[in-house]
Image (cartoon, rainbow, N blue to C red; front, side):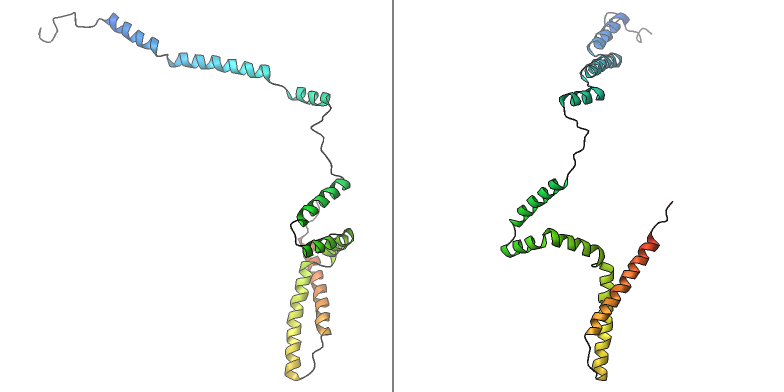
Length: 187
């Protein structure tokens, strides 16, 4: 039995020696608890610094009004400013156009012609009635042309104009009906 137990006790580390070595290791590596504690202290220091240097919303607006500038006030573009911006844009765009295109642009963008064009685009030049009018003109004129060739009578060109006007009117009525049907009821 003496073989199982070492006879030399000097080579065996004592429990106090093991504790001393583990304590040395722990002192070199900070524990997770100490690390969290340092991190928390650092975080509170940063928060205190931020609160010290932060400016509240009320202070910033009061400073802006004291300086005479109000950042909240919107700027409005009056008619003169819009006209000046439009003129500058037209000048810069016309620089890149050819001479003939420049002249045409000057004629088209006259205020009188622009107003007439705006009114016409809202009333006369509606895309749906023009489409219906042109398609009906193509179909009816083609039928009348075929009949005039086949039966031998002369083709009257006013039929084409009359069908265009009637088709336009039908398209306009159809567009109005579509808008009335599509309109949501008032609540």
